[in-house]
Length: 329
Length: 272
Image (cartoon, rainbow over all chains, first blue to last red):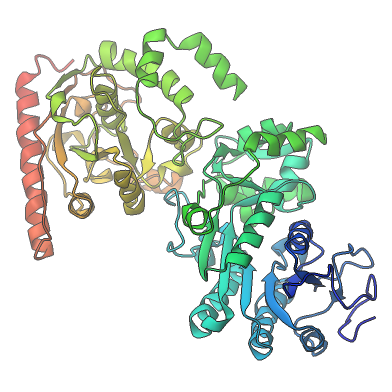
């Protein structure tokens, strides 16, 4: 068991995954499906990876987790003392459904602030942070192909994701105040694919999925393997800045459900209060009520800057992404 | 998706299909949508109905269609009226179905449309685009044609007694035209005001339903004859010295539209 262990450890390894010659990389949120892909890709690219998880998952940690530690506790610094990191891939974020507001804020914002302080102190030269397109907020007046300069309106539209907006602000401040950290912030569209357990992926995986009568917003999806490749490319090439990550392909929510083999359960959409109540009544079978507007209004982001800067093209087409969900039913 | 394909195969005549197939619709992804939600199959089904409305119900006569360039960015700026967004649909169809040089102008729609069930989805899938400056700028960068009604709801929701009186124009379209070096084709639309004559706005009820206005009118669209006049393109190059100068340029466009409206009223033989 390592010195930095704050909770039960799945294993006692402290020397990371792989034996890469290109240096050690810290990957946070290491128990997540995307992180597992990213870690495999980084190891293949000849990096040694140390996986960190701050969510308490009992004993159910995958092999990619080396440390379970709260970023706000002192033992977290021991991870930096023990390893000479060349970079950090910060994928860990507690979502609204996973904890209370206070715990979320503490882990996502205060914890990340400490992570960045330690990164500076120990001379880390590359930081990649995963944000979400949810920071733009869902609103009927949203333009299409939202670029990176568009205001993060979620802070005003849906206070439940204010920690995600604040997290981004934190990174943005550090991006300009501490250019030596070479921060890259990625705002991906809906990530889906095997193992992904976010709200939209859960809907696609269900046999019956809810949708609101008269609403079928246009959406973008990126396969988890493509997203992992995007993370690794952005980490390796490291052009500091903020980037949307989204393919140039679009599908409506209801078409996506049908393509994924789901049967649609139509819920009332007006008045808006009734839509939220019916979403809540379905519990885990429906997206959380605060995200209901993402299932009403299109939030299409422009991923062209990322595609140009990092020469990125997704490998997985929408059809194969949905075929995977269909096959698993 | 399957329902749409089935309906399309049953409902859409070959000539309407040929109209849409002949349009340059830009990049529509693997499921048939562009980033603004335009879907060729839904457009074909809608055009089947619109053609009947255009040719039989409103018996539209369009003059000066040659003034709309066959390619390149352009703003089609017209007068708005008639409570429903029929004027935008008819202008778009006129340009899309003109044969040689046909293109699909994208109509700028009110920001509240997407919050109305079915209507928002449908309008996007037939080429409607939220009237946001960023949307317009991206569209013009892609050399699209845009239909703009700078009066907004001030024009569409006005009572019948104010018919053909241009309401205040927003200046956004002029700034876009100048920033993106885009010609403005003025359009005078006559007849749409008579399709749903309104005595006034039932404001409290509209507010309760979350609508910008609710006309006190017959719940029917009357078969008024519609005349469209497309004027010669206007060019506004150069940086304006002040907002007052922008206002003057907007007045130039309004004057051109007024002339085209007068021309349309003179050309119209009957109201119905």
